[in-house]
Image (cartoon, rainbow, N blue to C red; front, top):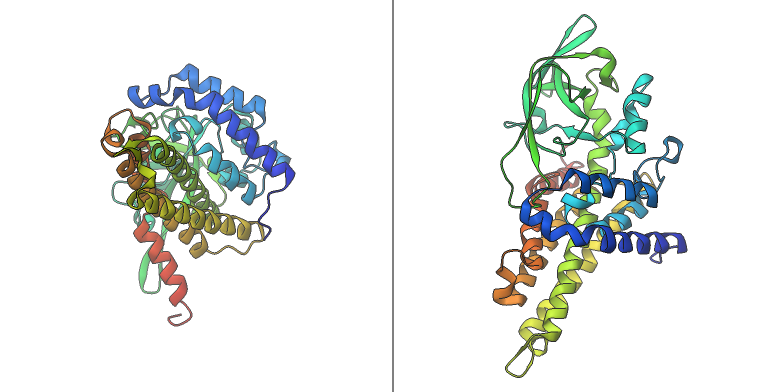
Length: 386
């Protein structure tokens, strides 16, 4: 693994950094205060991202995407993360799972998402199935040329603006290792499908303006032509995408942590108490040293996992380690940044307070810290307990 960026990578990182500072950051405080991104602002960001060539950078060139390798994607995610999810989400990275589209699905879903004409959302989590994805209760029953869906999803990001959802539903059951398992199928469900209701979910303390939604399926009839991949093979379709997503969340955490660190560093250098900058006190200086060390370690672990993805060598444990460590480092760094700012770090609408709030969700979504530890431990112990 080379530790020096190529000229092309550095130019891209610099361009994304400039885009974030010019087009996104000026809106962050207002979006956080109002807990919403105005539709016209979302459309403006999306168009500017398209014009700049940043849109769908995670998708292959053959379908019109940016064609970036995973390592470069992680570098871009790190820079985008220096502004709230509520804004940088409109520099869209369509679900790579859409590469499983076939036939007419390619023109109806895949290509429009890459071109910025449609927006997707990923609907897996349910009230009774969070970390235990195998416990999902949404059912899809075959009736002629259709499947009829019944059930509910929640904590579905971006569903309020999505044109369609990638919905996972149980289509069969089987026994493995003495346990009953669900065979799951992925469906492409248009927002205007009869029987589908989308409702705003509870307000979250993190990422104001980036809302989650509840999806309800009441005899929702979906044509069999909307099956993504193969019937009963939904987990195979989603598997690699979920692990890759965790590495990108890790990269996002690194970017957020670096922003918090930069703010704390400047404050420590400029804020004076007892006649000297507070950074001259070891109690503050050593916090900064620990923060910088933790961020560097998280960054290297994340980039190494992305590099392994490019080599087809990454395991679920690799992705879990990156997501676990980077999200927990972010939590520590954001908390220490608040501590260095003192009372000012706790003021509502302050940047550090906002970063502290936003950091908390990273240890929960895309797989909790506990689930990441379970994945890592399971892989470590597998040779002993086959």
